[in-house]
Every structure is written in structure tokens, then in C-alpha cells.
Image: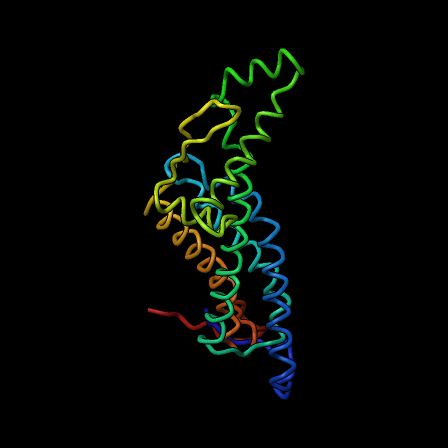
Length: 228
């Protein structure tokens, strides 16, 4: 069996500018697709025993496989250029994941079993406990602004690494709230997610180093070469 390059899918004389245009288009589409998946990944990452990290690798492979079709016209590419593009998209995707994670935690920080008494009171009076959830979310975001400037996703990152715990007060009732991944465990988990995303993209794009597709199928009449 032989590994032999087929005819390149783009002319060898294609200009560098045209090939780079195809490459950056593929990276742009990859980022957009990952940004859409990041909303889901920001929730899956909280699965027990850090099992959710597996889905970052899967996301990288799926998105890279789709976008490889757009990047084929950019071949051949150097390993450094591919790695640079992959890392760029992985970093940007991780930033989006942190944004969605912040929104998810802020929206659920006061959920059951927290503020049970207030929640029961709200249900009796208004038939819904959504008001308590909203108040907890607003208070959480405000406390991040006060204690971990500038608040928002950056304040969330600072709070998570610092402790991941907070005394949250809603209508004169105080609860100690926390998240499962906190401190350096959160930081290591987030870096691992970034690396797995990059690995998935790299495995999909590394074939761009070849000037043409590689095939293991013998052409008619071609001799079979046995490899020891």
C-alpha cells in the first residue's frame, strides 16, 4: 500500500494572498461555529469528574472537519502557520466559553436549594420564584463589580480563581454560595479545555501541510508495495 499525493485541489500557482484568504475564511467560520457551541460547552464542563472536558475535543474535531473543506485551497501550509491559526481560534473560543459560563453561573447562582424560605414565600404570593432568581443574579453581578473590578466575565474569572465562594444577600437573607470548580482547579480546567479544543482543530487541519490530498488507494495498474 502506498501513500501518494493526489492532484492538488488548488493550482500550484495560486497566489499567497488567495491561499491566505481561504485560510482566514476557514478560521473565521471555525470561530463562529465554536462560538455557537460554546453556550453548550459552558454547561457541559460542569459534569462530574471533569468529564465535560471531553466535549471540547469533540467540538474541535467536528468544527475542524467542517472547516477543512474551506481551507483546502490554502494548501500547502507550514506547520507554524497552522498552529498559529489553531491557537488563535482556540483562545477566542475559550474567551467566549468564559462569557457564557459567567452568564450561566450568574443566572443559576441563587437557584435551589439556595434561598428556600424566600422562594417558598414568593411562590405563595406570586405563584413563581423567578423573582428571587433574578434578584440573586443582579446581586451576584453587583458584588463582582464591587469586590472583583471590573466585574462581568473578568470579575468572574478573578472571583473564581480567588475563592469561588460568596456571601450573597437577597432581601435581608444571606446564603453562602459557591461553584464546584474554583481556585486553581478552575484555572487548570479552563486551560485543559483550551488545549483540547486546539488539539481537535489541529488534528483536522494538519493535513494542510501536504500540497495535495493523501490517498491510500492504488491507481489502476499500480504495483502494490509491501511494507515490512
